[in-house]
Amino acid sequence: MNAPHRRLASVDALRGCTVAAMLLVNDAGDWGHVYWPLEHAAWHGCTPTDLVFPFFLFIAGVSIALAFGPKLEQGTPRGMLLRAALWRALRIVALGVAINLFAAWLLPGAHARIPGVLQRIGLCFAAAAALALYAKPRTQWALVAVLLLGYWALLLAGGTLEPYANLVSRIDSAVFGRFVYLIDPATGRGHDPEGLPGTLPSLATTLLGLAAGRALRAGRARALPLAGAAGLLLGLAWSLWLPFNKNLWTPSFVLWTAGWAALALWLGHALVDRRGWPALGRRFGVNAIAAYAGSELMQVLLPALGWQDPLYRALCGWIVPLAGPYVASLAWALAFVACWWLVVWAMDRRRIYLRL
Image (tube, rainbow, N blue to C red):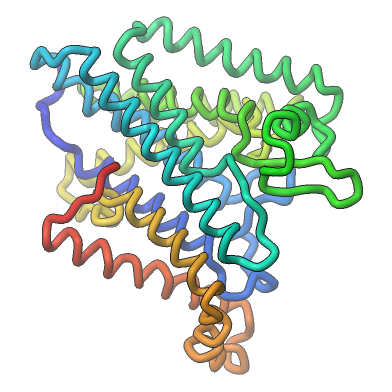
């Protein structure tokens, strides 16, 4: 029997903590002095920062299961739900492209980029929503296996996993040209960590979240820690042949990060929904896209207006002689998160929820 039709505070809290972590790692005060857990792995490997984006996609899958289940039971037509999901996905993608173009227009030395975080979220949301509505769970599981094994074969076909030379980067360069995140000045090759081929295993991450959401709705939360442990073990074993790599979103990375996400979801559900602990992060969670997109725009405007460096020196410069540059850089990042927490707190108090 399905669980009662109610919004789970733990899911909002986990989504919110993930968004807060996104803000924390996206705006260091001094990029030359960042503690290693707050940096992405240079190429192969997985740091705590590398868990953030997979967590968001996993939670997107959970949210689809929790949102669509009750509506389908109430008789809402599948076509209506799909049209709404596709329209929302299109708006998310368009917002991501607009932010990238805005940054290219305002920031000196920046170039236009087509892929991005919001773009990948939109594409994965659209595909996962369609599969949630029209594909049976068994079919979804089969698709996860096909996506991971097929993507592994694609990576092997490229002959190398090295930056710029791997097949994924070469495909993105062919599709997007110079409108990607990085261009190698020596070879002219491009690379984008949110490119097109990497969206396929990212969809697998979202579908694993969809399965976790179904388990929550069905009252089978006890399956989550077992599934999480299985994901960690399988991912770790696969990494012996195919390393963790967020830039390429390798299949081992999918299983490893989904394992941690499943454990975090189970822990949040047990503490918040079952035991009544405070839903820390909920305010970020109910205005997730607004907080992320707004913070991205702020990171464009501050340097474009010439305010970034003066603000950093005024607010955190005094910390450097007392505690060092790393602490000062972290203080700025924490202040950035706190600033946006005040924004979402005020929005929540006024019941303002911006959903694309």
